Amino acid sequence: MSKIEEVAAAVESGKVKKIQGLVQEAIDAGCDPNAILNEGMIGAMNVVGDKFQKNEIFVPEMLVAAKTMKKGVEVLKPHLAGDAVGSMGTYVLGTVAGDLHDIGKNLVGLMIESAGFKVLDLGVDVPAEKFVEAIKANPDCKVVGASALLTTTMDSLRNTVQVMIDAGCKEQVKIMVGGAPITQAFADEIGADAYTPDAGAAAVMAKKLAMGE
Ligand code: B1M
Image (cartoon, rainbow, N blue to C red; front, side):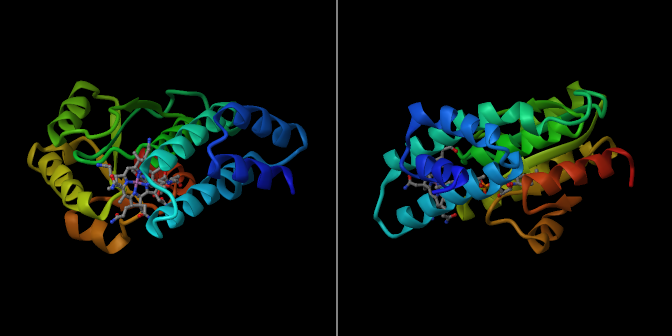
């Protein structure tokens, strides 16, 4: 088994205590940090999701896998870092109301921070009004990001974007959206300025939008 496969297996089976050592071993062995993240950890979460869908595992196992991934990302974080933190202004980020998934959102935050933003993470289950408050309280915020990870919270994302538009936020910020069920077509339909399928693309897009491109 390769080092990355070992990381994937540990996330899949929820080896919370072992994960940090295994990620460190993979880094020491020269594995690309992005491959450890994408092929190892995100790949494992997809397997976990499939097993959940087939009723082979249940919510507690999903939670342990999520906790394991978070621990692993802590070790990986310094190896994914990039530009000086804060130089691109504040990036307001959150998972929309009704949605408790935060791993994808946290990865977006990590990559956005690596692109030079100071990330203001509002957390999960964030009411639309909180996004508006955070944007207005941070005049250096030019881009905001909202995640929805469930098909059942896509409407909450729609509402979040609408509340931001109604509050006049588009005069100050560009609105980015993402999450597994979100598509470019849906983003266009709800009036978002940008959609990206993953965290890496989100960081590139955030930079472009902040620079007015
Ligand atoms: Co949930 N869950 N979950 N879950 N969960 C999914 C999403 C699901 C697909 C599993 C399945 O059935 N196959 C399914 C949703 C089905 C649907 O949408 N109809 C599901 C379900 C049903 C549920 C519950 C309803 C289960 C229940 O209670 N019966 C419940 C809902 C709770 C709620 O939110 N109200 C629930 C609960 C949970 C846990 C709490 C147990 C746990 C979350 C723990 C946590 O996040 N702290 C959990 C987990 C772990 C999952 C899976 C297994 C993994 C999610 C994840 O972290 N993926 C998931 C199955 C799956 O995803 N394959 C599943 C890895 C992550 C890196 O990917 O989040 O897609 P993702 O983020 C990506 C991109 O989407 C993108 O970039 C990220 C990284 O590249 N992206 C953006 C995300 N945000 C972005 C923002 C951007 C741009 C890109 O710009 C701003």
